Amino acid sequence: MKRTPLRAKKRYGNSTLKPSGTPLPRTPAKQRAKIRGRAPGNKRLRDEWIACEARVVDICTGRAVDMHEVLPRSAGGDPTGETNILNVCRPCHSWITDYPNLAASLGLHEFRWPELRD
Ligand SMILES: [Zn+2]
Image (tube, rainbow, N blue to C red; front, side, top):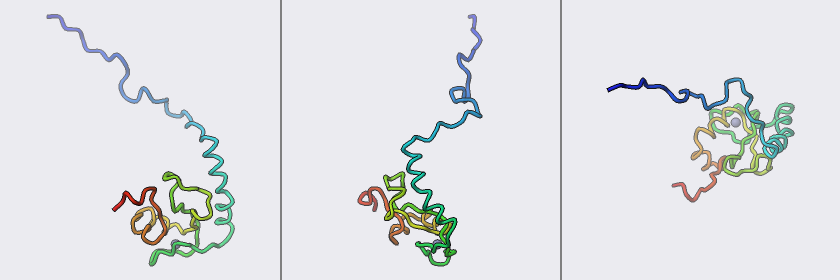
């Protein structure tokens, strides 16, 4: 029986992806507007000494450098809303994202559907 050598009909690997070096797609206008809306808050954190609003015991450094979204943008939270933003220091921010359940019990974090969590 004569055998036909196996041949790839198309290239393997990431041939369907764009070649490396291709710039990422531009951020959508609506999202750019939201990010711009945070600029004054970010500038304030850079220019002024603002106290951390989380004050997680033993790790807080005192000076806020980050804007934390209590209800994250990914869960439908407002990235510029006064009531949704906490000015926090970096260690507190890391703690909140590492321990969302504990942070929620302290009122530092919210879930999109809290009723679905136990
Ligand atoms: Zn802190």
